Length: 277
Image (tube, rainbow, N blue to C red):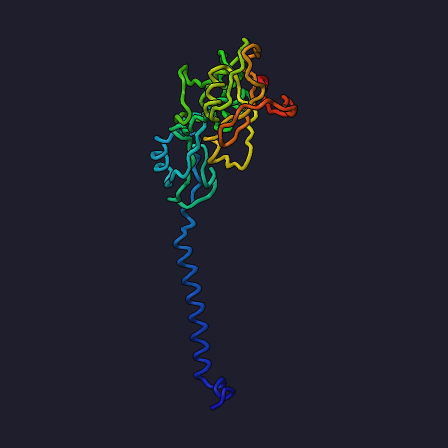
């Protein structure tokens, strides 16, 4: 029997009828089940959780016939802690009874940050660093010393870099007001780099430009380098203002001191930090 003859038989049309009926019946059952599952007659308006305290949310949700879940917390230094500030779905939206409402609340614990290291920074740079960390500049105190940050205070006490404190805390910084007395230029020739830096600091001078001569790896060789020249040169009879910059020139081995040449480094070439920064 060929196909044309088969489609003219009663058996073929019985199969077509059964298949069509099955599709219609299955579709109707699916729609009926979906309608029963979604229960369109049991929908409610979403209540407004905003402004509620966290401890009151559970009773409120139970009375309104919905479930809730806190999915995010935000620290707001100006706002009240433990308060609902957002929800999804929004208030008055239509939702099924028993629907879970997702809440955002203000954190009951403030966010903590590490106290940044502001030492030796200019006043302007220190203020910018505090802002980056989410901290505030409470004020500035002045002390004898170079015009850079000499210390940091939190709630009236000194605070070390790396200490965990609340974000938004106020920090007072201590800045040197500049040393105005005169001092004799120390002799740095023959000292290591670190020895020269320490001596300059103890005498009230600042490290200026550091230059290396020869094949040098500043990451591994610089600590063992020796000063072979300085500018200005040491002079027992000449005094300069404390806080002035002294440049040093380094080699890998100790050499006899040399006189500075005409190519001394000027203040314009040197990046001299200003107290007004």
